[in-house]
Amino acid sequence: MPELPEVESYRSLAASAALGREITGVSAPDSWYLKGGADAAILRARLIGGRFTGARRRGKLLLLDHRGTGPGRDSVLGLRFGMTGRLVVDGVAAVDGLLYSASTNQARHDRFAVGFAGGGSMVVHDPRRLGGVELDPDESRLGPDALTLTPSQLGAALAGSAAPLKACLLDQGRLAGVGNLIADEVLWRAGLSPQRAGRSLEPFEIRRLHRHLRRSLDELMRRGGSHTGDLQEHRLPGGLCPRDGSPLARATVGGRTTWWCPAHQR
DNA sequence: ATTGTGGCCTGCCCGC
DNA sequence: TGCGGGCAGGCCACAA
Image (tube, rainbow, N blue to C red; front, top):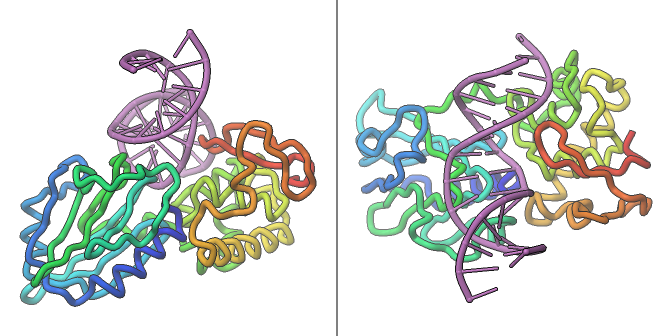
């Protein structure tokens, strides 16, 4: 499912293939998919005739800067991908395989699209409709991006919190970009129990977690996605820790199915 | 305020 | 063979 690495590849695709092209059409057939009070008419009025001028990402939120016709017409289109959303530009998807997404690319799963002058399009394809499109999303609700997070920012995200460490990592308001699979992977690599209270981490553990967070994100992006972690294939009943062979534990932590190794994650 | 829970939504997979 | 139920999880509304 799209976590930070996938959305980063969507951003890259949009940056290389969707910027500067005149928008001549907007297709928003699923009103449920439009968030923040937007509807198809508003999106058409704002987007048509303009162009995307920048592609940014904060956590799992893709932000497309847009310049409309005339002054004072700048806006930002926010795209969320939920767990099965994909970005397709001119028929080319940014990510080939996506865990849990339908194998077939059916047009009825196209939830939102813009058409460009001279042909071509940018499409949000999302079978399960857990993503959404929003105009001028409130970026300040998201914490610092996990990819550029500093150690002190990570410390601040955990400080004083009685919530489980994993719940802190998943809280997009504390830090943005970590989803369920990457949270398990990073905690496994860092040797930290997901059940520890966020505030219980010592400074040296925060530094260690930060190091593994950054390193893991880099590695997962190089490998091609959030599902390419070393723990991933062992997150199933009977799974053993690929580091020490101990049986993995499974529980709901932070509201999500969580797998970890009680032997080395403390 | 902080933390926890349930539900949204659809497709897949298991067991009957 | 078909069908029901459980499950997957990002995100949000709501409860405690």
